[in-house]
Amino acid sequence: MKGHKLNIKLVFWIMIITICCLNQSANCKTLELTMPDTVYESDSYTEGYISIDGILDDDLFIFLSSSDNSRLIVSNSITIMKNYTSTTFNIEIIDNNDYWDSVDIVIKASADGYSDVTKIIYIKDDDGHPSAGGGGGGECFVESIIVNQTF
Image (tube, rainbow, N blue to C red):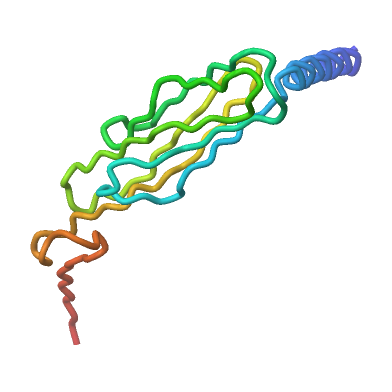
């Protein structure tokens, strides 16, 4: 009897997996998100590009989001017009004037009938450490290391 119950559960899980796979195949259209991998805070803005395979019969509304709007801002939504396959959008980069504040930001794009897509954009700090002369490279680090050694 226990073996029989195990078989029923196994069949049940196979059915769920099959249903999930069928649901995913209905949503197999993909968005392609293109933008710089790295930007500097001082760049102020850059441009992103989103595209799809095939030509649209109707306008496609795409929703965008940033994982940190205090560092990088994108429009809430953009549109790929019917009979087109792509569009561009502005990306605003916020210079917070904090040193050692380089960060990865995730941009997400989603649209009805399409799989969501995310891309990471690295914002490279350009402020530098004040004790190292400030400004410029953002890659200048000043460290003090104290080593206690006993002989």
